[in-house]
Image 1 (cartoon, rainbow, N blue to C red):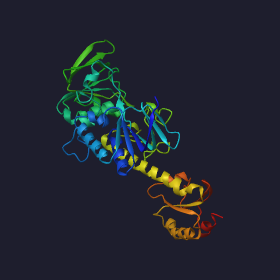
Image 2: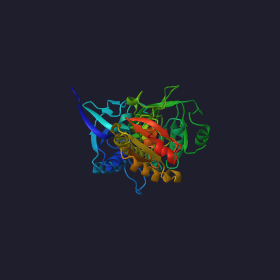
Image 3: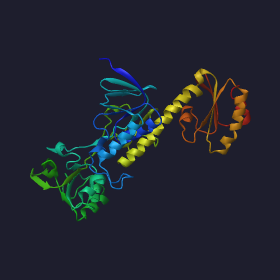
Image 4: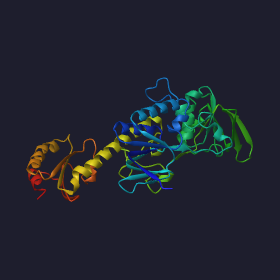
Amino acid sequence: MEKKTEQYDVVIIGGGAAGLTAGIYCGRARLKTLIIEKSLMGGLATYTNEIENYPGFPDGSSGLELMELFHKQAKKFNVNFKMTDVKSVDFTSEVKVVETFRVRYEAKAVIVTSGGKPRLTNAKGEAEFLYDKGISFCATCDAAANTDKEIMVIGSGDAAIEEGIFLTKFAKKVHVSVMHDTGKMDCNEIAKADAMQNPKMSFIWNTVVEEFNGNGHLDTVVLRNLKTNELIPVPVDTCFIFIGYLPNTEIFKDVLPMTKAGYLVTNEKMETSIPGVFAAGDVRDKFLKQVATAVGDGAIAGYAAEKYIAESEMFEMQILNHGRPSLAYVYNAIDATSRAYLSVIEGFEHEHPDIKVSRIDVYKSDGLARRLGVSKLPSLVYINNNKIIRKIDDINDLSIQQIVE
C-alpha cells in the first residue's frame, strides 16, 4: 500500500503537556502544525487524579481536566491532531520525515515530546490498578490525596526513598518494600539515614511484589520474601512504584543523541544535534519531570521551532539570494560598536544596489550567525553563487567597502 504524503510546517511527536504547549506556540505563530499521539491526548498527566502544584489552579485540578484545557487551547489555534503511532523518522535531510502506518508526514521542523513511562513490576494484577485506581508513580502529585492513609513504596533508590520521606508528611504510615538484605538500599547514605530514623517509615526487607489485589481499587499489596518465598499481604490505600522510568525513545535510537538511560540530549533551547529537530518534556534529560516543567520545555521548543523556520526561509531567500551576490551584517543590537556600523552598512547598500544586504541581529537568536559560521561580532559575510566568498570579523569603514572587491 502506497502511503499518502502530507506537508506541515511542524510535526510534534507526542500529545502530553509539552507537546500540547509546543503546539499552542506553533499554532499561534500561524504555522501549520500537527500533533501525533498514539494513546491519550494529554499523556501521563491524564491519569493523575489531582494536580495541586500547577500554577493558576489554587483549588487543584484533575490531570484529565487540565489536559483537556491544554487540548482545547491548541485546537483554538488550528493545531491538527492524529491519534496514531509513529513507526519511523528520517531527519537526514532539510525536510524532516515522520511516518505512521498509513501516512508519510513531511515537515520543516519536528518537536519530539514522546514522554516516557514508569518501569512496572509486571506483578499479577498490576494493570488493573494503574494510575487512578491505587498505583501511582508521582508522590508530588498524589501525596495530599493520601493524607492519614497507609501507603507502600516499592524500591530503594534515591527517588524511592526521597519520595517516601516526602510522603510521610501526609501519610499515616509508609511501608517500603526493599529487595535487599536488612539495612541495604540503593539510595545515597544521607537519604538512607533519614529514612531509617523516620518513625512513619517501616521496611520490609528481601521482598518484591507478587500480586496487587483489590475490588475496583487497590487495597492489598502481596509481597514475596526472596529468601523464604513467604507471601506477605500488606493492606494499603495506595502503592507508589519507584523502580525506574523508561523514556519513549526506541524509534530515535541511532537517530538522535541520548543518554545511556535513553533520554534525549538537548541544549537550553530544546535543540538536538540535528538542526530543525527539537525535544521537550519528560523525554529529554532533565532534573525535574512535572507538568509545569514540561510546559516550560514545550514553550521554548515551540518558539525555537518557529524561529528556526523563519530563519531558514530568510537564509534561503534573502541571504543566499537565489545565488546572486549578498552581504550579511551580523551584529548585536545592544552593542554600541555593532550599532555604530549600521549607518555605514546603509551607505554601502545605496552604493551597491546589485548586492542584497541583510542585517542579522543576534540579540534574540543566533541561529543565522551559526549557519554562517560567525562567532565574533560584528562580522561581515559576502556570499555569491550560494557560497561564502569572504568573511571579516575585524570591521572598519574600509573593510566594508572592500569586502566585495
